[in-house]
Image (cartoon, rainbow over all chains, first blue to last red; front, side, top):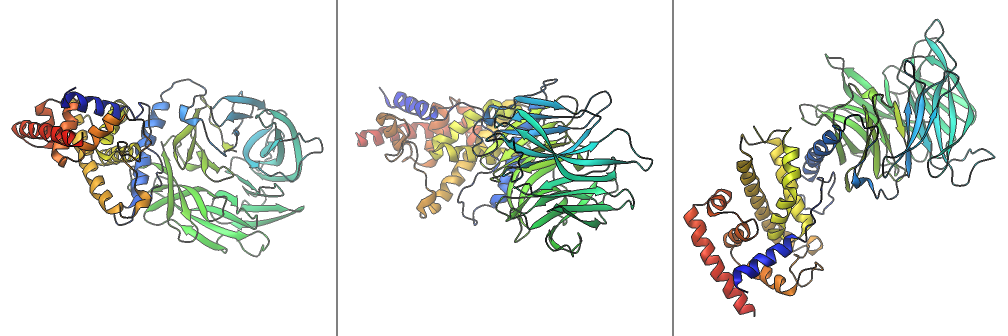
Length: 390
Length: 164
């Protein structure tokens, strides 16, 4: 064999070490690059843009498919096996919630609302301390914020309650449960729901019927404490120790009515002397981050995960972790197409280990995480879930 | 313009494996090769060239990949001093890659050649590019391609002869 043939064979053989497979550009490639050589965060951020534009947009062209998922969805490690998607009632269609497989996007179960109830938001209770007596071993629990009863009062108000949902470990709906948490609120206002891991504390935001004020409420040990908020609440989350609430608020609008600035506050729930705006300001948007919303906190309590938009950037909606210590982007998780017309049509939920994030934007549900490009996504047909949780 | 945001995804899907393989020949490991190609596409996404011909775009991207490989190798020389980030090339003795010994020997010999000779050989014998295409990618004259190719083959033969 002459030199050319040997070279050709060696090159071919070496090339075949690289498997011919679809490879998205990883959202995060965590290498120990030396800072002197590359602004790593910038490379990662833009890398994520490229892969997301490749993957999400293309998958968005699947037409009327009700569910679909990418092959990369397999192997989510410690993420929950399924997640919950909540749909509000529409004309001629009852509210419902669905469970979907994290790995495959498969629809596992559907349950429709009865008695004219409407579903608003959901939160998982990963370490449920409050379980029914007939609880099933290995069951998974969620809280569901529901509007109960038909019709609205003359002031446009309705009654709201929090239900406890029980699912099998495989995602099959098992039973409804009740909580003692009921309140009255203005209808058609964005509402946020949060709970601690054990489910023994619940927070929610709403517009008060009597005063018309925006409120943040914290329910613990049979007592509800409320705080007024002058600015719309875009996100609520407990710190992992359950001692504090992270409250995201929008602080300004652009000329087009779109939210342009946001801020995150932390408030000690056991020290109800503070109001949002009087607690500790964690993070405020600046000229680089024009919008900050749907914030939640990582499981280790050191980072906030939020959707944001950079001014003048071609990145429509980005998801990143911000260090609570420095306020700077500590990890860029990904980018998703602008399916929603505003951020009230989006929701975001990190899994318990904080490695992957479940995002609902418009009619798409996307899973992003470190080490995975776009791990999974679901097209959910013509109507859009109001919330997702896992 | 072919390299706009709408068409790039399709272009990427079609050529990504080939480009990663091309980069692999020069940087030695798949992860770094993927990084290189990713970085190229990130830059392409930011500053798409005004090209209407897919072949010209491919040549442009190949050239960008080669440039990025050179930068990576330059950087690696420094980073290798801090050995924790060093990944052995697939043809090195320490690599676990499934590569036959003869092929390892050829690849090691190839990587002892000067950079331009190595690139010319890879573009010809892996990518099967004609002289004029190689000249476009490497931005050298076709006559230089031919002379470099001739010298490179001779040098490789000597390297292999010496090795055996």
